[in-house]
Length: 271
Image (cartoon, rainbow, N blue to C red; front, side):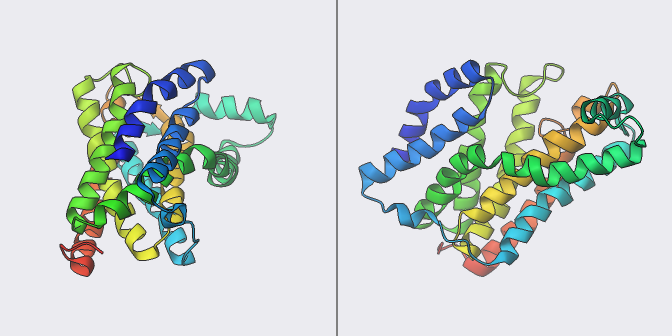
C-alpha cells in the first residue's frame, strides 16, 4: 500500500517533468523513487528487489517474446491489409538521416532493425529500470507473500495499466483517431497479458532484470521499428500499436500460456 501511495503522490511531479522535458523517462523514474520511499518506510531491504542477474535463459526469453508477439501481430496487420509493409516515406526519412542515399530500401530497413535491437534498446534502460524496480522488483514479490500466482499476475498488471491511464486521459499517450475507451481497454489487455509473462519469469528467475529486458524489448520494437515502419491505411490505427487490436490479442495468447504455466508450477499459494 505504501508503494501505491508513493506512486500516486509522485505522479503529478512525473507529469510535470514529462511536459518540461518532453520525455516519459522522468515519469517512469518516479516509480523507482516511490519504490525506494516505500522500502524506507516499511523497513524492506533494497536487496530484496531482485538485483541478482539470474540465469541468462530468462534474459533471452524476455528479449525474444516481445519481438515474437510484435512480429506476429504486425505480419497479420500487413497481411490482412489494415496497414502495409513498409512505409516508403519513413524509409526515405531514415536514409536521409543516416546519409546513406546509395543504400537500397532493404539495406536501410535491415540497418534500422539492427540499431533498434541494440543501440535504441540500451538507451531505454534508465526509464524502464525506474519502472520495473517498482512493478516487478517490489510489487510482484510483495503481493506473492499473501496472494497466489493468478492474483499476483493480474493485480500487478492492472495496477501497471492504471498507472498509464491518467496520461492517456490528458492526451499525452495514445492516439486521437480512436475512442479513448477503446484505447484504455486495448492497452489494459496488453499490459495485463505482458504482466502474466513477466510475473512468471520473475518467479522463476528471482531477478528483476528479465522484466527490464522484457519491457525494453516491447517498447523498442513497437515504438522504433514495427509501428513507424508500417504504411498506414484508414483502418491501421484500429489494429496497430498497444492501442489497437492486434498486439493486445497476440500478447494475450502468450499471457495465457504463461499464466497456465504459473498456475501449474506455483499453484494458488504463491511462492
